[in-house]
Amino acid sequence: MTSNEKLGYHSQNEGDTESDPSVSNTDDFVVRYESAGHHLPRILEPSIFGFQPTSDITKVVGDFLYNHVGRENVEIEAKLGILVDKNLQTRLNLPVISETVINPRDDGWFSFKSNMTIGDPVEYRHIYETDKFYTGTGSGKIRVTVDQRTNKVIDGGIVKKTNVAHLNIYSPCTHLDYRISVNVEKPMEMPNGQHVFERNKNRLSYSHQLFKIDLTQVKGPEKQRLSDGTLPSPDLTHELEVEFLNPRILLEEKLKIEKQQSNRYLDIIEVFLNNIRVLAKRSLPPQ
Image (tube, rainbow, N blue to C red):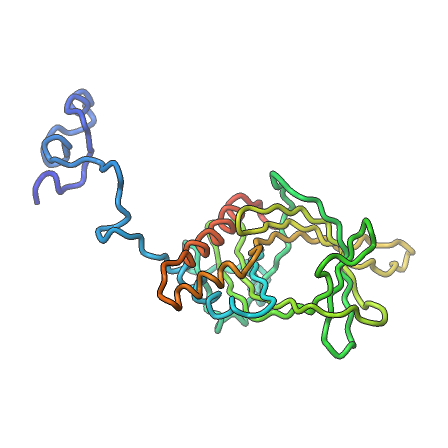
């Protein structure tokens, strides 16, 4: 092994090492760029083959969404929260030290809890809505979303939402894990009768390029009075979601793959994951 193949200090100026008594001047530990001919390239290529390999997580998430993105009325979202061991009732503690996708075939022993500490987005729209849920109509549970200020149903606000599939990602380096979900929101007619359940939403929402980020405070239904006559406060939860504004864009990139055309499918998946990651890294521990 030559001297410039060994680990050691790197200096562009011989005088720097000679003036520092803590650094050995022997060729065994000092690599001089001038004599070795090594330098930092102006443009650093991503690999010896000239391209950056797709990360395992991006590939797994991309394959997961690839199978579902073509559905009609599809919704793609990620919720931040924690994965909870059902037996211990604590956050999972897997023997890994980095972000990990959990096999969907082995997710029966834990649950996903989306409640988290409230935060402060930089830019937002402030939305006040109420979701009213109807059942017993022969079509399953129907959600009707009403603007609290006008008391009118919002555009596209009557849907039957069905979960198609989800993927859980454990993130031990942050306070929050996340779940990526594919749902179908089928438009419905206004149901008859009275709703059986409602929840009030105080939502901060902002958009960036292909994605929408929502921080929602959800107030549950009023509780029954206690034996002493007092009325308990309704439950409050806080949810943080990253959602595709238009899943059709992802579908169009998938169709390019099938036609063997140049596409940006995995680039979109990577940005989707990056949005989730930066939010998770900035988050406080769940309450």
